[in-house]
Length: 388
Image 1 (cartoon, rainbow, N blue to C red):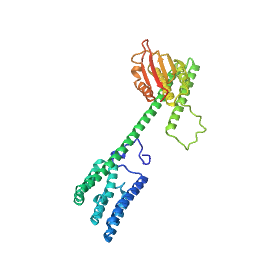
Image 2: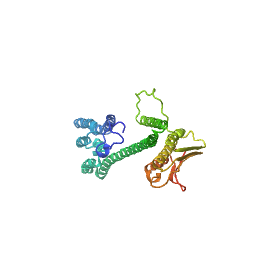
Image 3: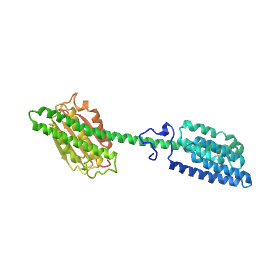
Image 4: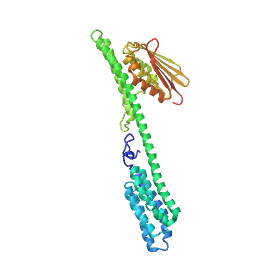
């Protein structure tokens, strides 16, 4: 897959048309096929034509021609198949002692390549054409000769179909991996941008309200907006650098960006506190060091839960974040005191909740979210540490 010019996410040529081989693979296929033809058919011709000098010379030249034509079997398998079939029949006509199955060995190899690299609707007709000399095989070798010939032809075509199915499965797995990776990147970008923009919107509104009467407080809100924007840009830069590396670029002068982690939970809470919402952070047990996947998932779940509180929890002015480490798992609880109803996270943050549940599922954990009996909304996640 990597040797071709196609990308894993593109529609494969094998499904839409042809499966072109790389030049190196084509050369290896030619050498292997030509070696097999020269070794098997060439030996049979030498043995069968030992007493027929003139016929032996012509048959030997035809065998060499078959091996040479195989050079183009990857690019033009139909034409090569026709040439090898004609020359093979000529060899058999010159030296009937050579079995028809052996004389058409090069054609059978090309049929296998054709079946592997072209759609079934294309390869089925050459298969039918290869079955046409079956009466000749019956006349020369009887039922046994007929059975051997038809069996080798069908097996050659079936082997190509099996190879084609294998390639299709590899392409499907590559597309699935690319799709999952794109979804993961989309979740990362959503978490970074949604949280930061939500905080910035609230802070900008607060700054506008107090700009005239309390300019110092407005300046604090503007500084918080700048800090949040810089943090978001740093995370986005780190994310894009991870998936679009630039090895030739010198990043030694840049300040290294820190990965999102539960160790930065207080920084995350501070961005929400700057909007006027009280955030209580409680930690129980040793939460570090955690596996990178669990640490990132836990941080993003808390970030998304806080974002949903800012965007959707009407009247919420207090949020409690609790992180508890219990041996083989980490439990996270984020609860606010907002009013439940039309504006609650349960009604308006469906995509965010789905993203949080998906993050928990990817590390083997679980997540539940819903309104609290006494008011407010709670998000609770349980993430296993071992085997994440």
